[in-house]
Each structure stands twice: as C-alpha cells, then as structure tokens.
Image (cartoon, rainbow, N blue to C red; front, side, top):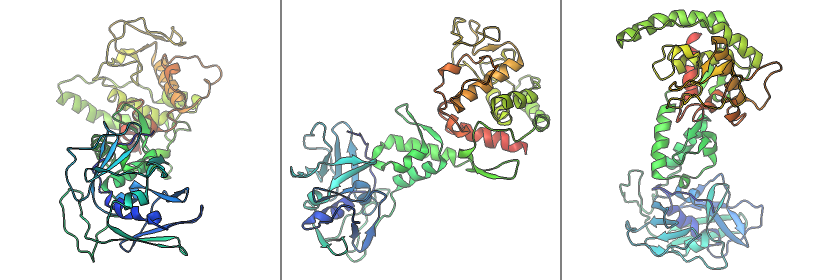
Length: 443
C-alpha cells in the first residue's frame, strides 16, 4: 500500500461533513454521473471526483481538508490518521491494524463496516467512505437524486483550527471555509517550477510531479524542506529572454540544440568580468589566475555533438569560479566541470570505463580526472552533457574521453533544470543559476 505521511493540515472537519455525504443514507448515482457536493452552502470541487464502488461513495481526504478546519496528524509508526475535532489529544491511541490505514477521530477508531472498501489510494489521493465517517459526525445530509447532489449541513457549530492552530469560534450562520490548504498551495507552487528536487529519503523527483500529490504524502519535516526550496527558487524568474528576444520557460530550455551566442560574445563577456574577478580574488588575498581561451572550443565542439556550447561554457564558468579554482580541482587538470571530483582524492587506479587513456588519466591524491589538453577537457565536458541529454551513441568518428560517460543514466537530464539534484547535489537551483547568474548576463 502506498505510504503517505499526513501533517497538521487544515483538513478533516470536511471529512466529517462530506462524509455523511452521498451514501449518508440513500445517495446513489450511476457510474459516469457527476456527483456534486455542497458543504454549508458552498460547492466542493476537486481534481479527483468521488468514486462509486458497489453503490457506495468514496471521496479524497484532500477534498475535505480544503473545506473545513480540523487538526490531522499522520502516525507513521502505526499507520493511523489521527483527527482531532472536539479533542486535542492523541497521546493514547487504540491499537493499529497492520497493513490498513486507520482513521482515529477524537481518540476513537472509526469502525468501517465489512461491506465497505477500506480507505485506499487512487491517483495519489487517499479515498475514504463517506457514510462510514459521516455516521460518526453530527451532520445533516440531504441527497437529491435528480441532480446527483449531496447537501451537507452541520447541526452544531464546527470547531475551527486556522493555519497557526489558533482556535477561533464560528457562527452557525457564517461557517468559514478554507478553499486551499497552505500545504497543497506550496506543492502547487513548486510544481510550477518544473525543476528537479531532492527529497529527504534521497530520491529525486521533478517538481511537476507534485501537482498530483496530496499534502498527506509528505511529513512535516519534508514540508519544511519544501519551503526552503520554494524560497530558493523564488529568487529566479521562470521566464528567460533568449538572445533572439524569444521568451521561453527556463524549464523548457534543452541542453541539445544550437548555441545562441558566438565565441566572440563569450570572449567579450570574460573581458568585462575579468576586472571584477581580479578584484574579488585580491580582496580574498588570493592570486588571480589567467582565464584560458576556451570560448571557441566550446562553440565548435558543442556544435559537433548538438550541444549548446555557449551555455556549457557558462556552466564551466560556474563550476570553476570563472577558472579561479577555489575548490579541489586545479587549473593544470583541464577539468572544467568537476568530472570525477567526488570530495575525496583519487587513488590513481580508477577505471577508465572505456575512455581513451591517452586523453584522460588519474593521479593518486588528485581530486578529479586529468585531461591531456584544454580541447580534451572541453570535449569530456560536452560528452558528459551529451550523456545526460540523450540516449544516442557518440557522433561518428568521436572517441570517448569522459570516464564517467557510461555511469550516467542516459537521457535523464534533457534540460538544464533537470541537471538539478543530479549533476549537483542537492543543487536545488543549479540549472537556474547557470541560466540567470551567468548566461543571461552576457546579452
């Protein structure tokens, strides 16, 4: 069963009302018919429609959580959804049932009749049986067969817990309804960036996948990380203006394709940046290193592989700190993208993985691969991007120089933003930085 970690979202009360809903007694609708649900006079909407199974109606917890306030907590260790409506205590819970999602309302386990389907997951949503939950709540439910409509009204004032958990009284005649929970809104915001994110369990997802996720899918700790990611991403504009004056979503800019800029434009950029870089190195008490002439190599070799060499040049500027090498890799290695720089020195016995040993080597105590020439270093960088961006074999006549080429899950990063959390870890804004902090400043 798909595990979902619930949080203290403003949810469930809706569960209570929506609950008694449709099957609350006599609600029946034929498969394919749309069921409308009204809670205290307001229609409830959801991207996942109620489901009819054996004449009984099931709705996603999310629908409920976005419409009425209550405190909900997921107990990972017991597999229980703990709902506090009139109570704020969950210190003493009934025994859990292994392999089942158990709903606990105000300290009591809801008994799901044997002829009902137990709570389950569909399309990333947690579905609950309305009638089973509704019978535990004091709600008035009316079903209109002609319009397939369920009208739910609370018989007593409903408790209300705001986002900051401050309890506020409600008038029966003026029930306040949340239309969007803070957590689901956060997931939607991240989804819009369509960028790779590293989760706390070590897995990597593209944020676009979050549009199909329920807030219950993640823990409070993961949401704290999501908020940090959101704040970091918010610093970058999603729309990028290309040198052609064309507007493009940064998430759509592919690694493969023609360069937009010429080698001369890249050279002029470096000339403009050099005084700033020199001053910065001096301020840190460091010696300025002469910046190698690589622009023409990146444009030429990038074109041979169908890789945008102008943006790859900017990636090299980012990786090397404008070729000042303040990290472990050194200038003499001709390593412009940190290939095999893994945080610890190499032994010198690393596998070439099919790479030409006359063009690349390993030295004991050195961080990262060493390339025979600047051209070899640039081509190894382009080959590594090629591995991320495509599943194609190397272009005809090309010799493998990148010793980590075969270690890449081919085609896993066709866009610059999909290098995030993979080329760089956690690398939340790695691709955005290449495009905005470097590339965009050239034109």
